[in-house]
Length: 470
Image (tube, rainbow, N blue to C red; front, side, top):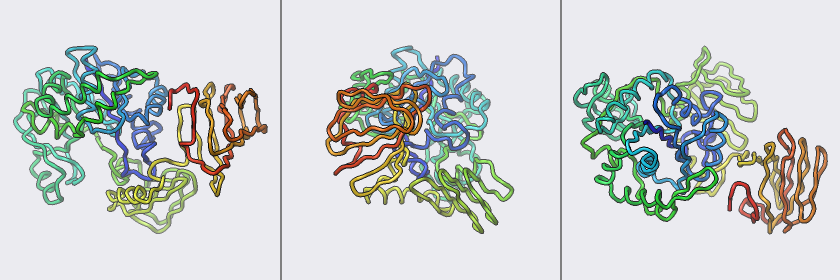
């Protein structure tokens, strides 16, 4: 049976300010109404003889992944949590151990969660060919037929023609080339972009990993063997995983194995690796502009303009990317699309938060978003989903005032139990245990005003929590 593995550990920093550490690009609706993660999962529909997908993500994204799976009515075979990123080779090893616990002959289909594929039927056909090669103990990758001399991808040079149409042995893997080398690659017709998608038997991958990168194999095996169940999640053993070297499948296995094969595909693929690449795959107006949100343009051409919270006007400009969010605005020339990472590095060094979170921060019970902040106070807008509740908690350094805007709330405040409706409020003194629940059938909205000497999110002591957070 085929076991899909969705790798969802990326951070997507090149799509800042929309993609951030707490809400990376795979969990964003960038091309359609669904997120890239959801599109990747739904792309599996129609592939025969396959299991439910295994999802591997960072522990901080576990509720995002679980909720987005629920939204598309998908139950994962396993939702595996990495305590920290160790690249793709260890992640896939853990998936291989998991698949073998169900099926000794399991074949893995490894897919990044943040790619776009337009030709789903072509993708399915390529998977069938890859599975046939994998059954012959080949480690199969997908090579994308290039349409330009791109320098942002690694390349695969095809070797001998194999028995299945469109498949080849792999002559070599090549690092991201300079422009002159990429142009030469394109002219030969023998080079393909490395997509980062794979098909192989779990057993064959593990054997090759043990041979080529034994330290990764051992650490990943110990992390999987020491894993624990937590709600719907599989938590890897943190100590064992911390000892695991960080490496990609390509470096750890594919560049060393003698069993690498490639399926050549032209399936409308993009890794959505930058704002310019997102612009290329998006629908455009007559002037070549991509417009998202409340946008007005005049005498503008070949621009990507996205407004998330406010109206944006772009006049007399060309070849620009303009992205507006509640707390940051990006304006750059499309040719500088790969340089967004420098802004992210600046934010990290300056110890700012704009690379980490948006003003709206999602939680398993709903979300909160910052409205205002000043000396010894901040105000937030909170939404709690029907039937959900926050943890029973207290704060050492802040008090809170809650005003219900709409919905029906049950509030635990010390020994008191209150039911609040719209236009009603309560005060939570510093040091008092409290809890907020939505006991209505509609979302609960309220305004929270915090006051105190310290207002950080780490000033929370939890006593009870449905989501088992610390």
